[in-house]
Image (cartoon, rainbow, N blue to C red; front, side, top):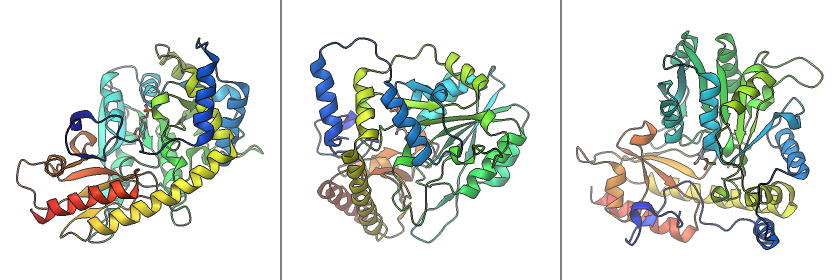
Length: 388
Ligand SMILES: Cc1ncc(COP(=O)(O)O)c(C=O)c1O
């Protein structure tokens, strides 16, 4: 958040906006990048067999793939965004082809549809109004079923855990979504990058679409899903290496994989630094311990920010089950003022909701920072709210 200050540069603004963290990557990752830098030759590079093995193991263990993933499934990408674009190109041929997504949603999902000449269909998540202080987003099943059944719908751009809703969709949710897609012959692109960061696995476990593939012994939980699944992930969010530009797609079904790869033939190559960082993140035991400590720290940050902000009159927020992103809704703003502009004027840089397909009264708070910085941001927000 400090590296990319955007419009906040040179101003007294606490940056709690773009989705990266203020923490150094785990030591093995830093060491691996330094060692690679010292190598001195930075030519075109492929993923090593070691990284491929580590990734396949992670898909099986952390993501719970019920089918043993195969090397051939993998396609390395210089970030998740290219994968979102390639998925649209793989599934859609014309302007009439529709892509369904659930808003509010990380804005580049929406842009990926429009830039690739398909028709965007937004289904608002429903705030199930868990309590007067908590926003809890749920799927609108009726709308989802009807939009997926539309004959021109080709793709569901799915985000799990969802940015910015913070929900880890339950296994039942996933199964229902997958069945609806199969029934209507719709491809699912499931971006699961935040699956590496569940904050409360005992209450809200992360489940992956990979867990609905046919098991090795035969028999699928959701027959037909395998033929329609594009899975995306990356170490970028969890290990704070987003600037190293590496992500991976896993596409089990060969014909779909061919279309996905053809749709991505213009993508840049992954850099050698991305590969070595991913290898150290996935392969080194110290990185895994770092991840566990990080999740505890973030959970405490989440509880602090949620507790403090929702004490302000009328403020509601998500209590995210994964990620370091909180959706905050502010009542009583002057007409024409956005919550993001309001807080920026009071010294906190947040992400506005409009580009997510959300309301002007909402902002996204990034709590992936030190407690001291978060306390400063939250106290500025509370002071601002007192002046409302
Ligand atoms: C769900 C999701 N997908 C993709 C991205 C962007 O990833 P990348 O920087 O690898 O393109 C983000 C960034 O916040 C995200 O939240």
